[in-house]
Amino acid sequence: MVTGRGKAIYGRFKIRGNRVLAGMILWGVLATGANAADPQPYVTDLVSTGQGDLDTALKASSDLLALQSTQAVGPFALAGRVRDEYDRLRTALESCGYYDGTVHIVLSRPKAGGQATPTPAQPTAPGAQADDDAAVLNSPSINGKSQDLANWIANVPKGEKIEARVSVDTGPLYHLGLITLKDDKTGQPPKLTPAQMKALGLVTGQPAIAQTVLGGGGQLLDALRESGHALARVEKPTAYLRPETRTLDIVYPVTPGPMLNIGNISLDGLQKVHPSFIRRRLTVQEGQLYQPSKIEEARQNLTDLGVFSSVGVKDGSSTAVDGTMPLDFSFREGKRHAVGAEAGYSTDLGARAGVNWTHFNLLGNAERLRLVALVTGLGGSAQQGLGYDVYADFSKPDFLQRNQNLSARIEACVSFSGHTGRQPCWYAGVWPARLRATGTVISG
Image 1 (cartoon, rainbow, N blue to C red):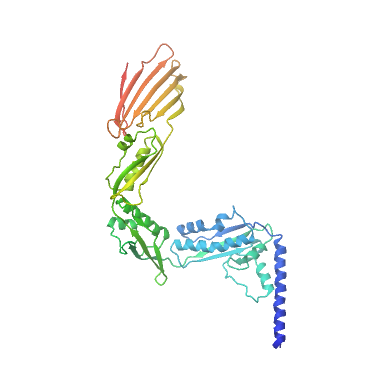
Image 2 (image 1 turned 60 degrees about the vertical axis):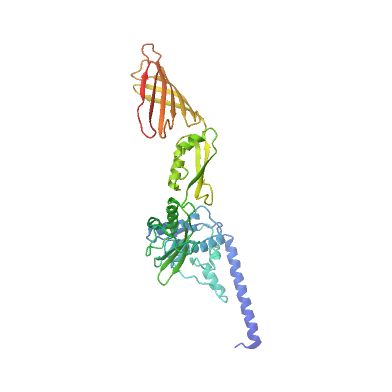
């Protein structure tokens, strides 16, 4: 029995003894670490949950899985990666509606007979014996939450690959509870049409999946803007977890703003293309209801002219201007000239080869002139000699009226045999831009 001052001295000797033994263990780890792998190779086994969408989310969130082949790291960095994995996978679980889920990570040494089965982490108590530390470091497997994880990895012999087995317990699936829309300006529910409410796509009782909840806000914003609410705002929702009912209450801040018409339309970046032609070509006009789908159709229609390398459009103001929303169209004109080569072959007509030259936006209204020169009759069962085919194609969009194109060709086709030939000819045709038709041919 030790009492009084002797007990205190005994206690100090005991503490110092433990420190000496711990130092010896640490020295052993460092000595072994000299032969440890840095970086430490490992392989990840992400156990399937049996749910395709959830498995996809977990795989997309797992750094252990994504980086195992491309960014191998040393023991202490790998231990940090394992610890970060818990938060990443918990976030993935919650995004799929599992707010009570648990993540399990076990590292093992298959060569040492380790089995990667979930085991609770055993933190080392301040007064634990040094031989217990040695047992942990030499164990064939270890829990990912263990405070000895980094030293355990450092103790793995060089050249030995470890296995990280990752699994999850999902727990119960949460569902949407109360869904509230609130106008920040008035503090009251916004006045929405049935179509706009339907666009939100959220109802009480459906699974509380993050992508669905966030996507609903985007859909509502699109519906509001398509109804003329150019300045509508739908902020990120606030979610309230109700563990007792396993539900998620959602509050969406929604500010529709006023309905606006299209205001002044500006055209920036035009150089050779005439602005008057572009304004005639536009399918949206000032005073028309602001609708993003119609505005995008107008942008695409201008792109289809073939004289611009890019066409952009954006709102011209962050606030309403006299009850309207201005639009700014921006243009970058493409190259005006292009040179190309042509070649073809058929058994009866033989081979043909030549070059072409194209002039875009010839007169400033997106006209196109294309010159082609071909050598024909190079072989072929139905040919009697060499010849040439030279022609010029001219096209003009919006001829006399919108969406009506003019196309014309002048062509000369001649055989060098001296026995046959064709007179120069030309043809012209006018037809709607999106219909195919044959022009009238006139031979001289």
